[in-house]
Length: 493
Image (cartoon, rainbow, N blue to C red):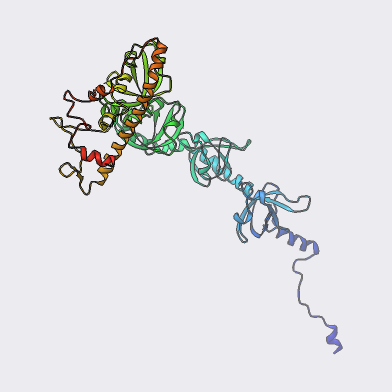
């Protein structure tokens, strides 16, 4: 029994040898690396400020959150998870606290430089996600921070870069300088190369005089660019509107859908000239179409000269009231009759479309209406009126002159006709009030010119309107007995 107690069973054998041999064996299981080396490991812990990585070293490596990604203020949980394999660069094997500091973004940076240099040599294309908009351009994640200037984002200038954030884009490499950590990209060059064939085909099919739909893509001081479907054309400021404008933004804004006419296609310079106003009716032609001699229009005095007064009768259209047509007396100074900015009623005497000139008369307009009369001719105040060859009024579509009633189903035509009639009637009422005021001021105006006013003959003038034919009893809405019932309906009689 004692003998058994004195015997010790051997359970292990030292196969390594000495203690020194044992330490060397342990050290051989630990990876050997230096500052700046790339190492691989596994994420073992993710905190808010750092990530711990097992790279087979005696201590776990630490990746500070700022060293995880080229994105700023990134959340570690959005970049890595526990168990993820990871490649990192050794920043320092032992900092002041004895920690092994690693960097994922610097490893990515080193790896990316090699790839990007090869792409640059091969004149290839890089692809990355836009992560930030900075002054002058965008930052693109291509494994490192690539700078894409705003002028090279599209084939045209882009003012708002924020919509590009988060988008994946392709670009060409313009500059590459590792010492300066500088990478400059151009998406515009990539688009030009990839769209060159498409653009050439598009331009070859585009012909002068074609009408095209497009979207306003950008506005500059000298005009507006319109995207016609991947290819931009320019509407010069002079082709935006029939009237004078100071800036294109007065007519269009970015995103507007427009219909334009192709003015010219320069295949050599790949430039397209467009016109917006060419697709719209010339206001002078519209005025000539909707206004006839003898009609009364309302306007504003824009300029007074020695020989008469210029009146704005529509936006961008002016007519002249010659000094002889200002009043029923001799006028020495037009300013004794009207003032700049004053609203007046004038009669259209003549419209010369070729020379773009309109002759107007203030005195004939005043003579055409009696402030105390109820004799209203809507055609005289702009209401469209058509007559047959015999001078009889052509009734609006949907109105039965036999029953003096509108036919069912023509409600829209009735509303349009009544609206036109009401507008003409309102203008007539305004004109009567204007003439009444003019009569009150006539004596004072004549006295200023040193003359006595002539007796006005409104009743006679109203009966012989210039708008009427030689037979004043036919051809006007005011004198049509057949139209009386229709007029009475509108007047509420």
